[in-house]
Image 1 (cartoon, one colour):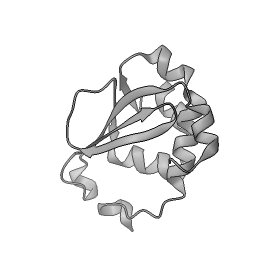
Image 2 (cartoon, rainbow, N blue to C red; image 1 turned 45 degrees about the vertical axis):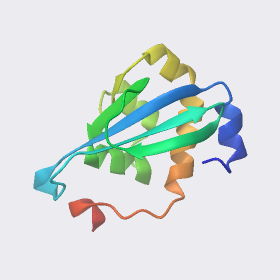
Image 3 (tube, rainbow, N blue to C red; image 1 turned 45 degrees about the horizontal axis):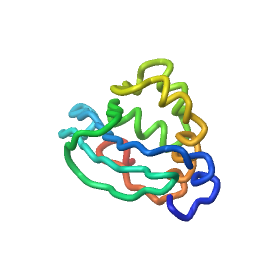
Length: 121
């Protein structure tokens, strides 16, 4: 993320922490929820961790919805609007940085990823 100049420019005013909660889907082979978090400071990822911490935003969705976002089947902004991706925190602030969020997802899509359960097939 820190090597992407486009993301850095779009997120230059972002100074927030995030928790992602990927909810378990036992029927799809994902028996446990997964939680990770990260800090963005002026367009740079300055920390990343597993597990719960107090953060500015909590984004939660079924594991499969995160897979759909990362594979391009579901647009992240549409996921917010349709409430497939739930947000705790300032929705106005999150929407203000939606272009940065979309770029964040675009960068994540370039990382080779192995998905859990049925999503790995």
